[in-house]
Image 1 (cartoon, rainbow, N blue to C red):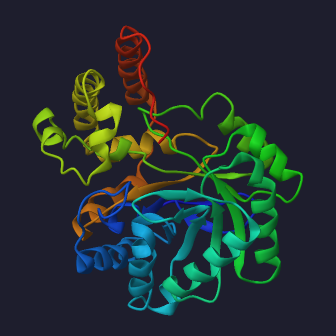
Image 2 (image 1 turned 90 degrees about the vertical axis):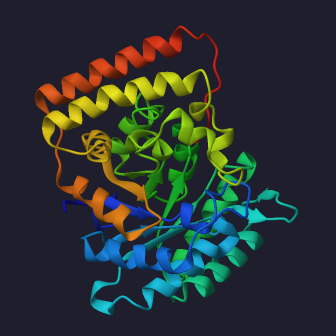
Length: 334
């Protein structure tokens, strides 16, 4: 496993981080279907066994369920091997399946206390504003994180899904340790402005969904997509529906050939591709079973370059041309 320094924190983090969005289960608006609790805990423990030293979660994942499972798993991991824990605030459960958006001080303070209790830790290693919404509250939310850091409730503070303009506003208050954006071969929106800005400002980038919510694993077919349960939010993601679905599946077939030529799996290629960026610190890889994280953790030892990198760029160009031919299409936020 390779390691990189996370922004201005001094923390050395594995280039693969365990993502726990999916283990929150399916009983909320952005769930991934039902989750077995024991498998989720075993997955977290296994991630440490295979060299991953940090875990990403959020208060809203499963409406607190993900954090609870992380907390249970931490009790099974020896203190000397305890992973760095990152979580987020700013999204709240307001009942009836609706998700609230609040960055007010009182709300974030309450969220932090609740996360500390669910995780059963005295201090959160990395605390992040989950979304810059409502935008007029981001300064208040960020100042609250600064205060929580000064109080010893959190060690480092960062943001998720923020733009360059929004990060610049927050940098004027306190340096940002990290940004967590979506980034993969099928979601490249951070390349033109955000990645260079983070590189210049010493902001670590820990991307989520590097395998395109599973699309870039090579395990999807049109039939599998059609059989996804209603609780799986990907049933409402345009990239998993026609006409984008057919384009993405053809793209994945091309990638599979490239990966095979390297002796890699498709997940290894997908993750190595995002890690090729010098500005990127780590890729957050979701897993719901121990065997999944065992298979993908090896990507942390891979380096993509040469003819293979060129072949990927050619496949990406063909996908872009196919999407452009569709005209105006829906572009999901995550």
